[in-house]
Length: 423
Image (cartoon, rainbow, N blue to C red; front, top):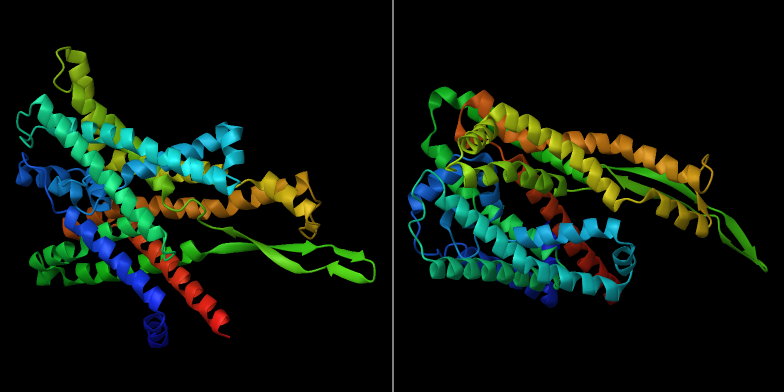
């Protein structure tokens, strides 16, 4: 570890890149504490603390929502835009072809940035409307001009964070958007630790010890699942050209246990958040059955048992769905056949494709089950401990560990490349 740090300090460009990323993260944290005037801060914090889904979104924004800051939407609109174009790639063959070329990927990235603007404005308007229609007096009466100014400010904040993320990604030390989410999650740790210490009760020492033990087990589990993969053996046929023989090598095809990452959780959050948010708009409707229906939807989603079951099932289902989006066994089988490769005991072509699909479905079951448990882990801990401060953010741990692993790998690859260049 010390040797790695010494190598980083000696590599001037790598050290400058790390300092640049730290500076960008500091700017992000500063922007997260610049509030938009005209909001009751105390009522806003109470509103987010009483809603599990909005509380999770607040964590991803680094507390920006809770502070009603200029970057309160975080990078969520950009992530939504990226997901939309990934899904469109399944439907539109032209987009799939563009994604295979560098120029096409750059064009899709440009379209993703453009789509982020209306999505940020739409989500900002929805959040403001939700706050205005809540039972707490969070936002007072604001004019149409003030509403427009607030939406423009929040949208500009999202674009600013998107720009910061792309600047950090250019340094090739981790994904910039992931680092922003990572910084937002980590920034909430001191406050959570402080709250835990303030509510410490010596009679509940075993609960605290159990919390620490489960947190450590969760981190270990996240590392195992994130790094877990099944290596499918691949053999390349030997080819003779003239007096020389080519090929005949053995390698493997890695199939990751968790191919989808945290995307299924983001999908599930969007679905779970949508019905109660829409219901908030109609809770004061003049038609009685609409108002009662809206109130019933809000009450149902506030039920921790129903919310937990629905959240788990959605995460589990979306894990399989997104894996189907990003993993194409037919294409992989065709590429292997073109390169003279085959899986021992499996015929090339359709049989290889079916084998890869069946193997993937089996190992993804473990990944889907793990993601579902991670998603509802805070609810489980709150049920057994009855303490709000002991709710482990399993999703937060998953993101933090995944970002740390990715960043460390990229730093090590940079150091390895420099060793080869100096040799």
